[in-house]
Amino acid sequence: MHESENEILVDELAAVAAVTGGSGRLAGLMAKIMRNNIHEIDLVVPMPYEGAVERVVEVQERTGRRLEPRTAEPGADERTFRFVTSGGTGGMNPVVVTVLVARGGEGDSSINLRAAAKEGLIRQRAAERTATHLAALLVE
Image (cartoon, rainbow, N blue to C red; front, side):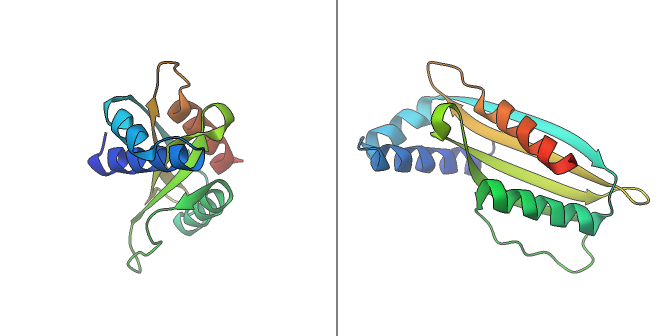
């Protein structure tokens, strides 16, 4: 797991606990020792690079909260997006999603979708389910 993903998930789980009346500090400590659930999906979409970037932005705005600014150098061949969305039972398990959009061949683009979440005693597979759901939204 990327170190920043782990830090983000620990902070997000602590915030969820604090909002729901639990101890945010204790939840943050427990999150550090929880197992990770990571799932990656590679897609090739039949749309030009600019259209694929717009599609990722649209899906991100509908499903999550952006973590990093959407800035890219003009003429760049790839662009990365990162956001947090809800997963698991009742949407109480935060999932960090990283999407890399790259120029493909003539008229298509490649998308790498990575979802990371923490797993408690009951496996919810939040990252797998979130990645699968977002991939379906990206290609619809």
